[in-house]
Image 1 (tube, rainbow, N blue to C red):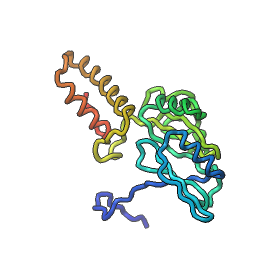
Image 2 (cartoon, rainbow, N blue to C red):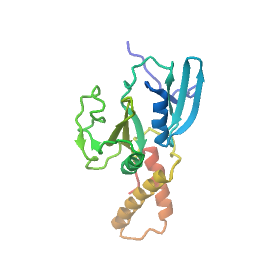
Image 3 (tube, rainbow, N blue to C red):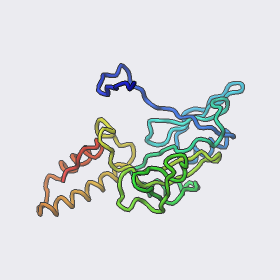
Image 4 (spheres, rainbow, N blue to C red):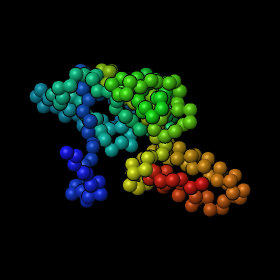
Length: 220
């Protein structure tokens, strides 16, 4: 018997996903790798036969932990760890400059949102190059840590409806700049359509950014 779920029911407490455990074989090697990514080192605790190291990617509300005695999973067995970026090229360039082996940009077939890094998901096919229409959620690149745990960069430039409850606060100059460029391009098309110079462009930009981040229809 199916149980109806009332998504509008007032929640008694938030449930925030903040920590993901990844299995590694060499803690110091993994610490060096994730530190070289430019991720923030939050903790490195050890006691007797136990150790836990925590890193947080830039702008992320969730962290990863690894260590000794923290998981029974096989090192390298974790795949499909998504890192959401607003500019795939900029994210790849940053990782490449840090000596990380990153795949070329790729996209999936149809509505398949995965690459060959996730063979257990959909049996998807990878096509080289970013999504031809540059749709949000559709362009990827991948890399792995020294144990083979797989990471996916996914370019998200506009959220699906209901994905966020309010406009997202920006945590980096790159994210804000990319959003402003999209707003500028859209505003240019708006002026072509109206045939007039819009002196209230700051208001138009603001509405565009708020609507984009909230997943609402964009101004035309």
